[in-house]
Length: 316
Image (cartoon, rainbow, N blue to C red; front, side, top):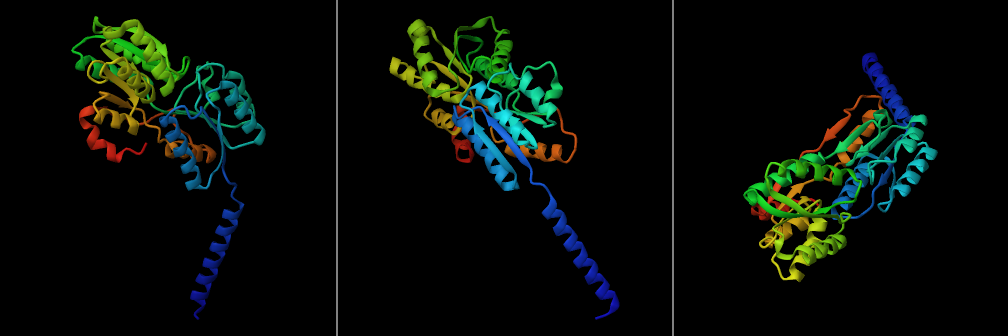
């Protein structure tokens, strides 16, 4: 073997050995995630996306289902601070009441990422970035579609999500912003259904008992409540999707199935599959790189006419 080849081989061996030592010494990223709960098919898909992406990247994930209780989320975040995780992520169940625990995370020098939902804090340095949907625009999209469908005239009932949550506040804001342009479109009843099918059914029963055939349309803040409402409408003796036009938000598979059956008229997408974007941000933050303060996911509007085309490719 020539002297030149021997030197090259020795350099290669040294480089490989150095690389192995660097890899072996590299700290594994640890992330704490306080999830709202499992209140809907959308939320389950959101959780699965985060868990699968962490596993794919070899990131240690401390995942807590907080069962739609703010106190559980605060407790989980404090446990992550005690564990000295690298990054904390959470989807806040409501917008207010986070300042104290977020200040604790900041004092511990643990960056926080908001996922799906925002918080109402005067100090926006308490969190690094918000990754999720534009809920106000989702409300606008639903209202624009309904105004066109109803030719600018409708008595509307509204199934709100969890009171005080960002999607509830913002979807309502966006929806009302658009229908304000149509004097003959009115919300005649509005009540929270907590984003669940059972509550959607229960509240829709109340609406029907109070208003009956006076209801022209339903705006539901998510698909699960809309599906519960469909059951109530059928039990009342009306035809969902025909006697009462229904637009909802999320675009889960069950909504496409309901549209194919003619029981739901339109669903506005709220994309839950944001695990990739979340962990992109985690890795950039850990590496000391800047990240945008707001990351908005791409979303579409699906009327029932396209349901058969898109159902086979829906991932959630």
